[in-house]
Amino acid sequence: MASNRTFTMLKPDAVEAGHIGAILNKINEAGFRIVAMEMTQLSTQDAQAFYEVHKERPFYGELVEYMTSGPIVAAILEKDNAVEDFRKLIGATNPAEAAEGTIRKLYATSISANAVHGSDSDENAAIEGAFYFGKRAQF
Ligand code: ATP
Ligand code: MG
Picture 1 (cartoon, rainbow, N blue to C red):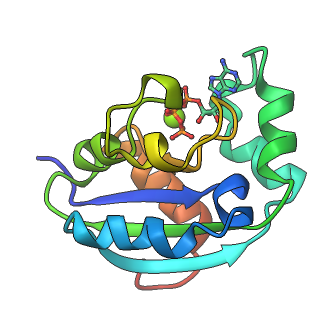
Picture 2 (spheres, rainbow, N blue to C red):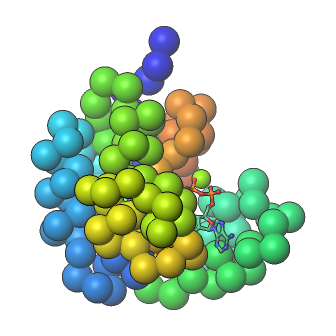
């Protein structure tokens, strides 16, 4: 059965550009409930651990540097079919390929500065949510 939770980060480009409010509004309008949220800045160690799956990719160094370049907003979101529906709401990794109306189409500037993260599976949603919020008992 699909889990009803996913994990997101509003990335440094979106925070820097002042899009936190607009993006959270789209998330709420799409029917997601925010169950945990924190604004923070990742350390290099945090970003390396979070994106460990990409460590052999050519863009890994750039990705870690970018994700530590400014504050981010991390959140756990709840909705039926959360992982799949949130991936639809954010759109393709490359904003140039993202569908009209998606968060990346509206707010991302490039494939690396692409405004928002969304978990790609129920398993990763649970791992990523715990990475941020696991120390607090209810999450
Ligand atoms: P995310 O995991 O952030 O939700 P995604 O699942 O759409 O994004 P992934 O393939 O998991 O895409 O890549 C993780 C992140 O790495 C992307 O969001 C983007 O910031 C960066 N990235 C991916 N491909 C490239 C690339 N070719 N060049 C530069 N950065 C990239
Ligand atoms: Mg991904």
